[in-house]
Image 1 (cartoon, rainbow, N blue to C red):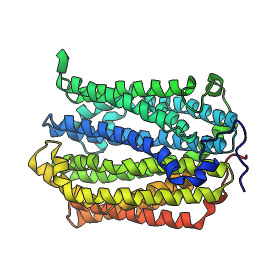
Image 2: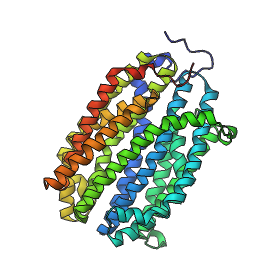
Image 3: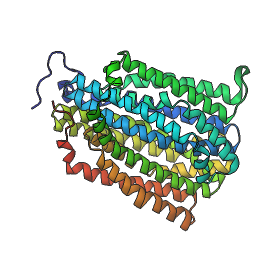
Image 4: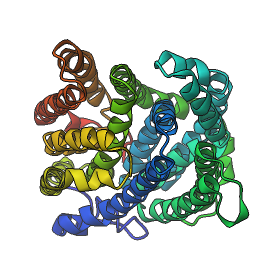
Length: 465
């Protein structure tokens, strides 16, 4: 039996008694701001692609899509650190050890700053090489290289922002990241409109304008996130000494937890790069249609990602408070929410595929292919949500290896092989890419459910109470 909440303890944490009697409300309190945050991010991606599509230039659309694959690969590296920091902070918070939570958060921020410097040094000169390897034509390489380099200029603030948001979520504050994302994305959309099309007397920069808008927005988001943590505007405040001090034992723990998630993200994105390369081999029209369908499909990540954030926080805090039963109940309840939300999204994609992709204003051939891909995506929606939430719950328990194993199996034995078979060998083209992806997500969800049912995650504890 878990000890009662003491005076001065975190009475609104996931491990508090009220969480046991109002689990639905606790899940929604944590998930809804994260859902809104993801919606805001999706709106920006949607708006960026929409504005670039209005340029009526397939080269710009293809360049932005290929550049985005590299940026997302880098995103996975920092997401791994954000996940490990969030898990450690959540368990320390649930164990009612705020000083330990501050130590974990501070060292996660320090490590993110060092890793940001390393990514800039390595990838700024490699942007053209990467795009050529992806099979881009010379004009796409030139435009995409500028796009990548402009955005990487915000690395020292943009990447640590991910880790700072993860720290706040681990302590149960999903609202501050949401408000910061709102400010950042409002700036991004406004700046893109001005700089892409040359509004208000500014020069029309086209794709470069989209890059400058994103770069300045990421810088703003980083400033807001770091300010919230360092000035105590969130539940877990970090003194400068927690960030400035070098603590090898904590850093080793962070890296130990981050490595499986980093491998998982790198493998997942590498697999994505390979099959994006397959799409590129189908021609610029297929690549442009693929990017449009991906942007619309990203709507499905809203409920799934928000509920996965709630699962990570709830499981981490409950296990920190030595209550594995509460952790399992919360995770199962979160899965029910996901099935309901993503089931509705599947129906929406089937019914409104063509109207949704038509918003991007591309050519009729591109829009027809994009609508077909989006309709196929309906087959993967429920499984995608289940996989994301189960993975989030296991990571909250400190089990970052199981999601890595599932991703390795999915990418190596399903995603690449099945997509190549269907899209290239059987001649299905873009339809083969999307059917292969649906098969992959459904298999991953099944594997993750098996690992969850084994129950070993219930015994994991990163911080002693």
